[in-house]
Amino acid sequence: MFEEEKKVEHKQGRPWKIVFKSRVFEEADLERKKILEDMPDCEVKVKFLNAQDMFVVKLREPEKEKVSKKKKKR
Image 1 (cartoon, rainbow, N blue to C red):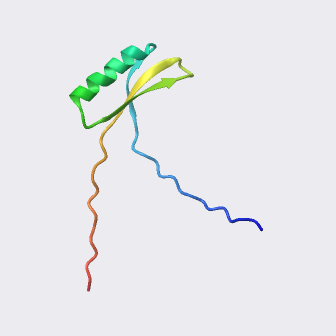
Image 2: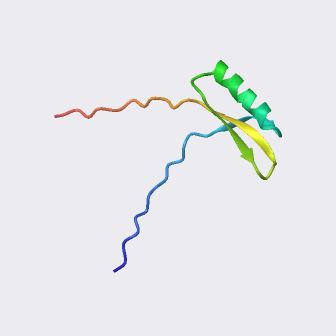
Image 3: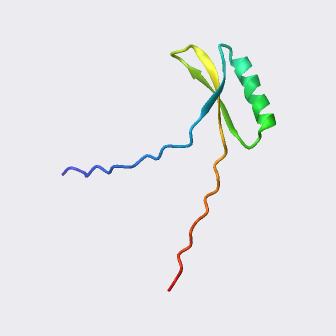
């Protein structure tokens, strides 16, 4: 009658670092473009913070490749 609820674990992603703040989107977007020119591998985004009434540019490093361990057959 009742379906069992499945609990799905959510993994926390890599952290974002705030590198620039501005009240105008155009300034934040220019900063984002400059960062992308300097570091094309990084992830950069512009986000609006409603509580502070400003735009922020956030940056995070690219995901590092994980080395998988192979199991030996015996």
